[in-house]
Structure formats: C-alpha cells, structure tokens
Length: 197
Image (cartoon, rainbow, N blue to C red; front, side, top):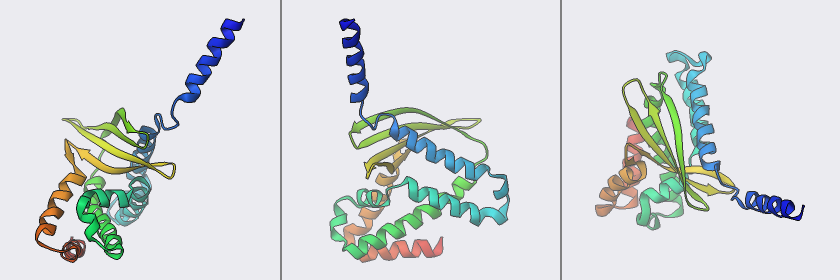
C-alpha cells in the first residue's frame, strides 16, 4: 500500500511540475489561425462587397495575435534607442499598416489550403517557436511562428516563411535607410508607403 501511494505521489508531483506553458504556444497560434480561417470561409463574407468587413475582422485577429511593440523593437534592433517615445509610437502604428497592406490581399486570396501544426520548441520559459506548414495541391510551405509570453498571453513577434524571417527582412530594409538617415526619414518613408499602397 505504501509503495502504491509513493508511486502515485511521484506521478502527481511530475504532473504538477510540468510548466504551465507546455503546449500553450502551439494551442494559442493554432486557435488564432483557425479564427482567421473562420472569417475567410464565412459564407456571409463572400464577394468583393464583403472585402472591407472581412478585412476589419482580420485586423482584430491580427492585433490579438501579434505583439506589435516586440515586433517593431526587434525589427529596429539597436536603432530602437534612436527613436523618441513619440517616434516609436508612430513607427509601431505605421509598421502595422505597412504589414497589413502588404499581406492582407494575400490572405484574402485563400482558397482552401490546409494548415498543419507539427512542432513546438521552447527556447526559454517565455519564448517559443511553433512550426507549421501550409499544404496546397502542389506544394508545402513551411511557416514558423516565433512567440513570446507577456502578461500571461502568448503572442507572435516574428514569422518565418520558407526560411525568411519577417523581422530580419524588414530590419535589413530599415537599417539601409537609418545608416544614412534619421528616424524621421524612416517614418516619412513609411508614411508614403501607407498613403500610396
């Protein structure tokens, strides 16, 4: 009897010692991606006339999924310190709009692709990478989500598509501008993109 209790106690300790975050990053991103698919498949949101309504719903999901501040800070990296608090706020806002304009149309082109989530790797207690792939009729596209735990919620701060990091890609572009210019020059460039796209 004592032996059984001891084994049971050990099992309970092991179960209770499993970190709270185990499995949560993948669950969080999978649930969010499923919300996106629910919007894209909604029969009430079909046709060109529903594009704005669909975009509005996707915008809400985007804000819930991404840590915009972390995304922006990592993109600017060491240049973040050159920005005043007001410039940082404007940068985060403009960068979000640039990303939305760049990728919204691609998302809206969705037909009936399948997304498979297959691996979660914990880098630390508050950072993880979730690996997934989009399966089309002709190919598989790997998409990795880099995530951070903030205020008890897992959020995405970078997306790697076919081995190309979104953060790294934009960092290179922004570094080129900031190497010979000021934060104001980068902000002006982003304002133009937002107004002309």
